[in-house]
Length: 194
Image (cartoon, rainbow, N blue to C red; front, side, top):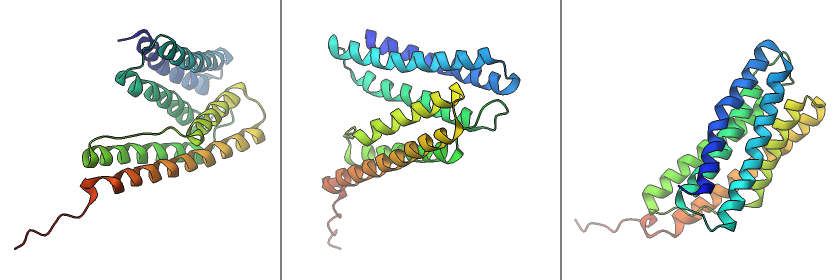
């Protein structure tokens, strides 16, 4: 358990607190819940950069970190999108089609990773700029919503996030198909001669 991985675990532990504050604000409209949620979201986003810096600077990259880091990102973003796409009296809700797009892509990726793992044995995930950009747009959409800034711009941000999320999902599907296609396990079985 490296220092970088401990920071990542801390990011994961912040997620339930973030969700709780969003739901409390949804219920009672007390602004301090919204600010606590926003502060927690920003803290976790900053810690994402911190654990990455520690891992690179002090040579602490690990297989555990390769799993925990994207998991922490997904937990924060998905929980933010889901809780903020619920009907809110005190906030403009994030469009549900964005949440549906993100969840659909992530479920598709998990299923694809499982198929590749059991068929090929080793999964190679190549991060693409479209995936990173979709993550940034999702974070900006959540932040914009919590800041209660103008709703028409929020819809445009959500539209951009949904578009790049879909594109990144298609790129991952293409990469997965390529991995399956080049694997000897994907070749037809020879006839058994009977």
